[in-house]
Image (cartoon, rainbow, N blue to C red):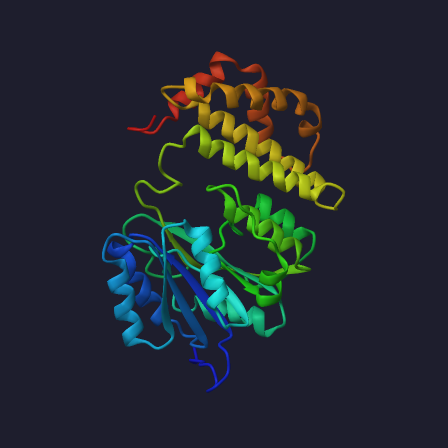
Length: 333
């Protein structure tokens, strides 16, 4: 694929913001994957979020080697705050995000840039996960296409190929500056931000090729045992999305998503060895699951497996609890 660089004196098309916190074990690989991009009209904002390992030194080294990289530092405040620090310092026309332990396929930014060049404010690629070794090649996928609103919002909530993360997407500066970024939660804030960003766009340019490679690490939010506060954050975000969708064409879709999220959170609580800390949340969830059971069963947006889970949650009792406990991962709880 032909290399493309920013014209001299012109702002880059893409600002790639990378929050960094104690990611020294993976930073060299992540930075190398950025530097291998076939599309070069970008800048990288590395935001060191108070790391205590050698992350800052590794960031400084790559900045000295490649003028497209800049290092910003802040006291530890979390990835959401680090992203905002990067956004404020960026000069690009579009914004992309990356986690410091992940990888980009060489054509990742080029595929996103194709949507930007076509005039789209919101673009997305597919993604794939890995634990130890990143994928060696990008699997073949369908051709890129346009998802008109509100279908793009429905796909965000219900289609795992789109993903809830910020990291496989590209946002115009207009979208970024028009949206109030959510605060007050530490988990699932990416989805809440994406909901608002998607709502501000008229649709989504989607290239399903999985060019973003998401690393699954021990102790990450996606793999560790969730606390009651973690689960409450997830429900808070689902409730906020439902409230913001009321009166819009996406309300029924958001209502099904909210119900599905409650079923998931209830099942996660059931899987824990010590359920006592989760019981207040479980009681509240169970009341809502019962009260909204009828409309949920009639929703075209709630898939059949989740409707079966709803029946088990409401009527399964000890049987459903036993099934959830069977799914308890080793060493968790």
